Length: 78
Image (cartoon, rainbow, N blue to C red; front, top):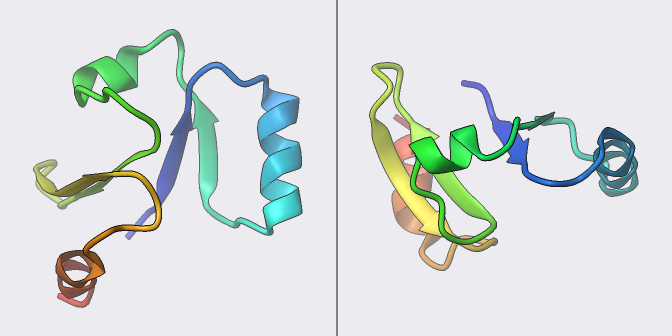
């Protein structure tokens, strides 16, 4: 399983500083323009997805932390 955080609009140095301050170990990438956000119909940030090995979206929720973590937890434990 891979967790990937996609950023829109921040400079690389800003992302790296924030990640370091928070102690995050997930990979963060900058998207060019809004290609990723457009592909996943993102309308607000953060929008979180769990995507299965077949590329299908298994879970989607706007905001963090998840308001209803049980469905996400169940999917992660499969």
